[in-house]
Image 1 (cartoon, rainbow, N blue to C red):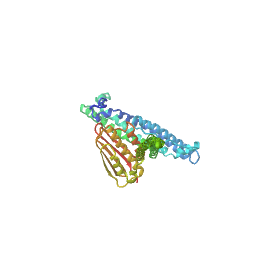
Image 2 (spheres, helix red, strand yellow; image 1 turned 30 degrees about the vertical axis):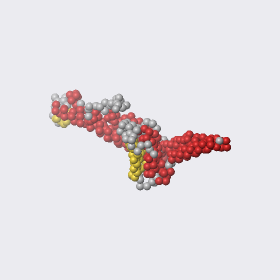
Image 3 (cartoon, helix red, strand yellow; image 1 turned 180 degrees about the vertical axis):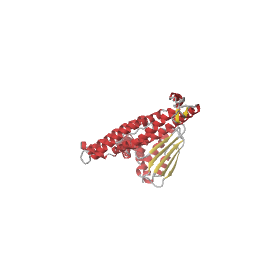
Image 4 (cartoon, one colour; image 1 turned 90 degrees about the horizontal axis):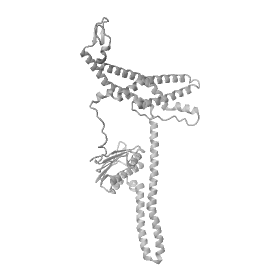
Length: 439
């Protein structure tokens, strides 16, 4: 069966092995340029940091020491902006900017105090000190390998340009000063030199990759946001998701009440009013209308029960996830096999999120998958709660299309959860939800 991917352009594959392509790859030359630029950048940063910090420390006996130290930290943060840009352009490493300095109110003194108390600023200062010795090593190794490798590899092209000594041309390995010595000028020696150069050229990209890996670690670890700031950002995002989800649920409940039970109760009140008026004039019609109203009351009660079950099912509160999921599977339009392995009940909030995640997934299977059977497994392992849902349907589920699975992923991430979807076209769907186990 043809798919949308059949007409997509296929990536071109090179016939050369990766080891032969790497010396000419753009990534290798970008990393080489990064190592070359690293030394002058590191020198400027190192001199600036040592000078300003030494000056500030020496002036601490006066009030001027603190502003000088604050200026040193501000300068290091400015260098951090340049270094993150250099890593982004040459190393394909995109490091987010760290949290800004928040001085609050208090004028220049508040900003000075915020700079001095900022752990991010001191990490930037540490980066400027650590980078210098590493940049010296990286510059030396990279330049030596590049020059030696390509120089030896191209030796057959330029060895005749060397000065002729005692009638011989080529690199002199050793000599006695009288023209006697060993020269690399025979065909075998020239080929051997070029072969050695080829080995160096082939090894150079991997050495450069190792050197720049350390650069990436320094930039990511010292110039990016701290773990605490990242965690705070994640919690703020999760809180926003929870608030949006709660607001959406309230709007859904309000809409269901307005369009369902409320409308039915209004119509019921009108019918009972008409029946009351006809009670004396036409008792049979009034009795029929009361009977119809009785049926409407039953339907309204059923709608209210369904709505209450959608908010939080009583079976989940009373008996826990196992029975609640079995009851949920029994109401699904296709057969669902449920397996539970839970030593005890998690926190009520985790139970609720797990239940509604399973409910949403089973509804998706019923509506969209065209499956004939599904399985639902739930178990506890390593302080995590795992929900595994599979079906034998048409596949093609994707968290990037539509809002259902994307909304579930956001709701789970708000509680440090995770949603993994494996749904190849025509191959069924496997969805795993992972949540924290909180007693």
